[in-house]
Figure 1 (cartoon, each protein chain N blue to C red):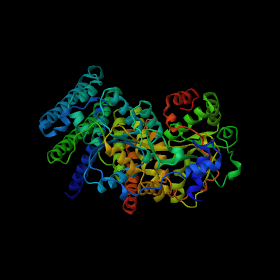
Figure 2 (cartoon, rainbow over the protein chains, first blue to last red; figure 1 turned 90 degrees about the vertical axis):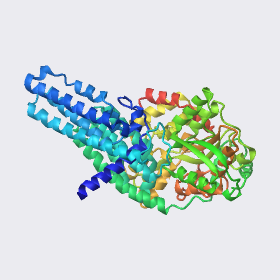
Figure 3 (cartoon, each protein chain N blue to C red; figure 1 turned 180 degrees about the vertical axis):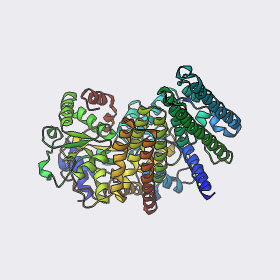
Length: 270
Length: 346
């Protein structure tokens, strides 16, 4: 129970942070639509989207199981997912689950394309279904946050004050997007996010950070410029890329503590 | 080493470079004394600022302090990458829209884009007089400076083994760290193009590339120098100061070239786009003694007004001679990127 509560708290915090730092109104698969600023009113549609998606995937896997690979078009899985409104609701609110959904979709697709046994395809389908339900739960929670005014509207520009420690939260969020884009098989876009995050965000805090812990900066420099881009270019699994990102996010948590200490110790301007 | 001596060094080769040295010194001394925020007018009413990101949050602290001191100021801020905001200001002006009263950019190249479009308001003389003479421009005020340096590994080299000419470094046998994708490096290459011409710059890039190791950013360059991966690097001064602050025994020191792009002093800057009186008064706050001292102390940036101590740890700069260059010319980035691409550097 305690674990569930902690998970909920973490999810809630992630939702708030994610919404705070979303700066792009247009994502990879087109405009996100105003509905993401009215989650509560659209929850019924999102639930129907999830059930429709799960049904479509199940039909495809059943056809594969009973009629063989020629009977199905695995590319349809991507079209199904990109056609639902729920897609952008989860992309704008909880990127880690969004990544898991893409991972599940490609898990099913690749297993079909590689003519794996139906039981193996079913395993990927199970993981995809779990991610979709988890995503719906996250969007429902986000809708509650939004109703209470705790979730900010998706905006075209960053307008909030960005302290150095808050920048760390944005960096962590961008790294979640790296996993999502990699899971979506958009490796170039994932690499570009790594590069931009380093140049436009991490570069802005590492000056202060290096005064506090030069070794930590050195390790993160390597992560941003070698380890993570290499994991992507080496065509590692999504789980391997996610592991690199999780490791970086843990280091960034340490960095955030140091930056908060530096912010507290900093004298006033006047 | 007093800051005054440094400024005299800058002045000797800056805008007043053609003057006899004593006259340059006399001119440098004409800058007005720094003004405290306590002597500035209160800011009241609306003000829209476009703020270029990149300084890592310290400008935010300045803004918060100004806002706190002026509770009747209704400050709206649009944040974004400096170059994108400069383009946005020009595009908005073309569309007949003026949203920003003020633009605070982290580099002077972006300032040049806006001033070239004729959108900047002239600075009042008292505000201009706050600045060192070599940093006075009609339509914008440099806020703080940064100087290009050659960080070097003190275990591998002594300072006298490093050429004092940026062009000569291409013919040396030193291994080099650089970050060609980094904006400050590209401004430095632009300065080289302006000073030396495209042909010489292209040859320099190709020669250096053969012995260089590429890093994403300039702190990465400085850290690589300190580790001994390369002998020297090309980087802004503050990275070395910050690293030495966190690691006092670092195998690292700074060298400077002489009167060339290798020791370019570039600046962040601010300009007014409207006649809103808050805009010019806000600029006065940025040039106040308190803000200049804060940015020198916390961001290791070089204050550009008279009488403020330079950042701690900046070595003696009596011999440093920055090139004579109009910083707004650094806006001409496209030919630089073309040249870097055709040279195979980008």
